[in-house]
Each structure stands twice: as structure tokens, then as C-alpha cells.
Length: 159
Image 1: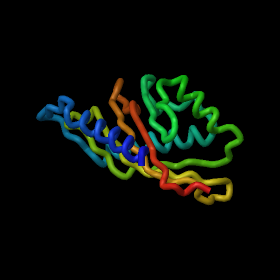
Image 2: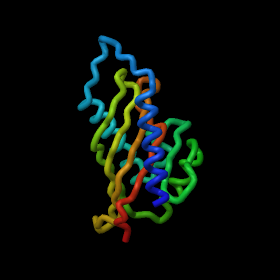
Image 3: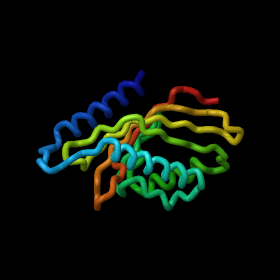
């Protein structure tokens, strides 16, 4: 119950941030939602491939100042903390993860994207061992989207 309240509070905050930001639309700005969704899915695919290969130092998904919220643990803040967390997560791990972008919500200027997606973890026999949903908030920095906040919630399928 407590996790649901925390998740709702954070999601509400992210939504309020997106709505309250200066989203004055430039008359010449055209937002292609399909293209942005494709770009975000490509970032998810690259993250999964890099993570599954154990090449943690090469994950370019996150901004240096990103914060990740997982259940039952304090937030992971910054690049080094994220690396240490992922490194411990991969010790003797033969599971693979995949991500599917379900929806994207884009600011009027295209510089901010809120992604809602689905993840699946399978073991070496291709049996799903964990599934769930996630939300990631991206900002465009130096012409590329980077994740600055994200969180996930398991469906409870853990064997």
C-alpha cells in the first residue's frame, strides 16, 4: 500500500512538472509523436542490449544527474551510484531484460518526454521471471534525449 502511494505521488509530481513547464509552442514546431516514440524505443533497446551484455560503463541512457526510484530502496542518485547498483545487480546474472514503449507524452516544444512502458525479465530458458511497468522522464540535452528520472513497479511475477 505504501509503495502505491509513493508511486502515485511521484507520478503526480512528474505530471505536474510537465504541465507547469513553459510549453509555449513555437508556431513552426511540429511534433512527430511516432518519430519520438521510435527514438525512445531505440534508447530502450540500446539500454537493454548494453545491460544484457554487461557493458555497464557504456550505458548512455541516463543523464549524469539522473535519479532512479526502485521499490524498497532509497533513490539512486547520479552516475556512480547507478553503476554500482547495476554492477551488483549483474553478479552471476544470466537473465535478460527487454523494454517496450507503450506511450509517450511530449511537451509542446519536443524537449521533454514522459514515457510509459512495460518491461520483462526472462531467464536462460526464456521463461518470464519478472514483468512490470515503468515511467521514464527524458529531457533533450545537446540534441539527444536522456533519462533524468525513472521508476518501475513489478507486476509481482517473480519466481
